[in-house]
Length: 228
Length: 298
Image (tube, rainbow over all chains, first blue to last red):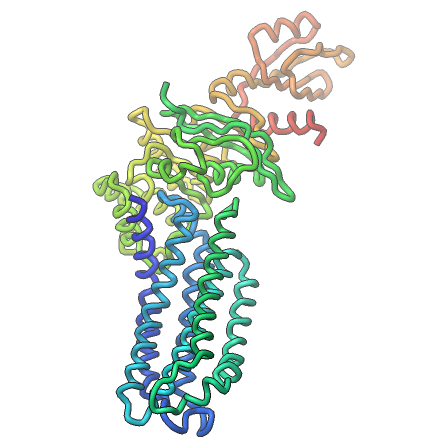
């Protein structure tokens, strides 16, 4: 019976996030034709506006979900209403995480898959860009999970903002340093996708950090004595 | 023996600047308990412990026979909880919220919900963010009452309501108890509301339960005596007297243990009882709290 209530809570959040999800998909899709995926991409021949819009869209989606869906609900005491229903605080946390992940992953998968499909179908965009793009998107997923975990365990808006600043600051570091590691940059313009050990390690580490951060958040929540 | 609606036994909870200390009270099924205390007394903390939102450091809590917090989910199927700081989703309508709660509770009574909409002058299609504070409280109460819970736990449910709205809400709460099986705990610092509908009263002050008893017991035992006596005459020490105020020949004695022989006792001491007045719940509450604080040296 409580699985169905968790399902209803997730559906509730997805309903409240619906415009956010739709906007993220539309903006991301609109950014695709503006992205220069082929030779002469942003670093060498001017600003790649489409890529900037695409990246900003994904980051903002994650921030909005976390701030509006998780933190604001607790600050506004809307969580009190939900916790008055037949759910325990841990079930509430599970539903919140489930909804947040679904709300982020749905557009994330569409946009990631859409971009990879575009690269594969394009005559000008080399398939060699796929692994670094996948690594970048997995990094954004990791950042989202870390921010979500942080906001789950803290009720403080200041800590949430600090989390946003740190994860946002990590983006240019990742793009300029990590994606330019020799083992990645060497294959970016190759005709075929090359999944080097470095790019695979980056993807694995991102996923591991994402999983670890959410696991830690769950652990902290399970030890919490006061949920309000 | 049926389980009590709620049982709070020796519950303690410590915060840096506040401690709920060894609190105990009990509400039987079919009764209303007014939970009265000044701001910061521990009413909300106690209610949140009762609803499993906060874990106590010591003691035990049961809600409809379910230990809290371990079986809070089972209890919440039959308990409605509203607090004055609770919020609904601003971007959604009242209709959406009604559909949401209805999808969870099979006991949802659509006909009663429609009746409450009319009685509370609410509109289903209205967005929550456009509701006033009073309308929001009424919307919360509608969402809780329409699912016909066995018990209600209300934290300041009439806070911020105008007199008409308060009357409407209190009338609905009284209606709820018609079948004699439902129970209500409601906290308030508004003793008028509490006095109007409660069977039992529990007073709390600075984290401690000051007194808990039937309302009529409080009203019968707490009395104020106006006594005339000569200025050099001393009043005898009588058990239960919590306050004596003398002005010239008149002494006003407040007692928490009035009995018919009191005027006789004072008469033997040369004092004449001119008047015996029942106290309002508010006066009882203030006198009770001040007396307890004095006894604790606070």
